[in-house]
Image (cartoon, rainbow, N blue to C red):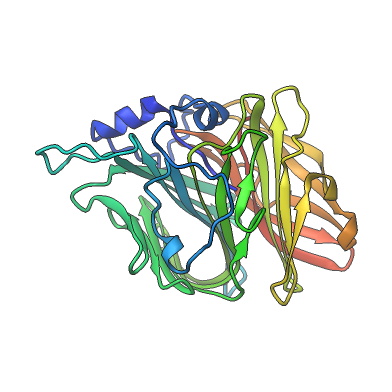
Length: 370
């Protein structure tokens, strides 16, 4: 399910043309409240995700500018020939400052802001790299296109035809350049792609995933280049509002089991410490058949925590996931404890390993609102 962005203050910073890069700067930025950003904005004039719709591919990989916010969210676990493991995240976000573009003489004028997060986990060395870029959707600096799908900021990009993709990002000592091929049909999350996040009509997103994407390419760290292979996952969402005022954040899991099945779960956390009934998920069989999961179909138990030495935030760091209807009980453990992104929204997102009775795999976990 994934990020949610941005406060109007951040948008104003972007319209001033400021581009931010965090690289290995481990000083903590001021964290913005995700739930407030998704629930307290002026949504007048924008379309809202209220009813199921017909999805068209590959067109729906492209932008939906009639909605306020959308994102393209790639994560993956990769390994070199000698067994060195890496996790990566490359996410592009579009945010509209107004529902309609205002005609101005300047070619710099736009009502669309783009930003991106790039992270790399080097499991062997125990190092985590994260960075972000911001730009405006003008003069070719950043944008998204549908005809031949492409989303980009400067030389960071994702492009493809719906099944085959190329992905590239770099920052300081690290870079990735990957080619990818989707191995399963698109999964429409929620009610035929309408993912309801709270009781209010329109507090929802249009949400689909590609849950098993064969991936190969190169990872570079300093002067060392690694040829890698593995699996990636795409989460694709667009919306105008999502969370309710009583919701604090969420825990999101994407799991790729070695037997060819996948699991997506998100647990919406309430400000009073409870779990919202609008938490949801899906179970994808080897043949691509999808079983939707409601909040009472699964349980996520926190077994351990980790305290960030930079922000002081305490995050869950080990979980037990139970899905009784599918006979699933899994232990989920981070491949690195410190996979905290110190970007404009401080959050934890990282590679994990998965084990259970007769099953194993890898995945990604996102923790927001802590």
